[in-house]
Length: 273
Image 1 (cartoon, rainbow, N blue to C red):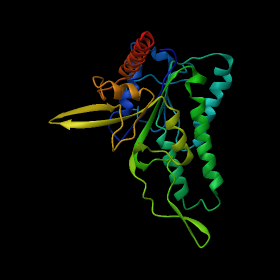
Image 2 (cartoon, helix red, strand yellow):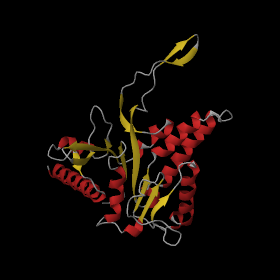
Image 3 (cartoon, helix red, strand yellow):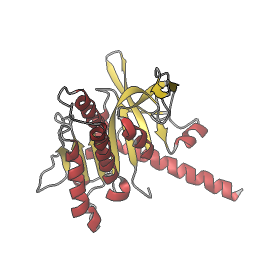
Image 4 (cartoon, rainbow, N blue to C red):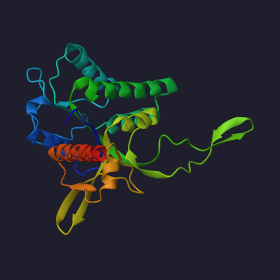
């Protein structure tokens, strides 16, 4: 693979998002000592995974969602002390999950004690999150990034909400935009982040008898907004899977590598003809 991947995984609660991301510590391609896993709601607490310490700065590090600048400050320090000096200690970074910061933003708005806060305050929150996401971009870290999101029924953030002019004033009307399952994010961050990713896939669970089956949906449907830079090859080649069963980090790497190899082969055949 000629560059690191920027992958998003979204899904409802208890569908295996954390389990998928945590398989990076069992990867046959990645040294676990070169993984930085940022957990902001304790989802890895029941997993037997290495913990980040000052002496051993890798593994799972807890970042409190109560302080939206905590993640940014930590990453900025990494960039100044390591990345900008040409030191790249990680092959994979994970944030589990980005939606926790959006949830904090909403709770902040509903807080009875926020009378002194303005729209500028909430806009600043979104800018901090965008800045943190930029600091984790593979072009900065030279590492794969797995971004975990909660999924929610939301309209396309790039689609304008219906408005009308009444008495010379522009007013929003009832929101009639169609909705799909999308990453639970807010404001301009929702419109910006998912479209920076190489792929945004949907994790879900099915129950059959006494068995739980976990799947990663790779192509969009009428109900789920999935994004992928390799989507055209999946659509053009029916034999390729539309979903992964019991997905792992290694399976994602192998899947994308196979897509890139297939695309290269198709391009070579076109050139030959």
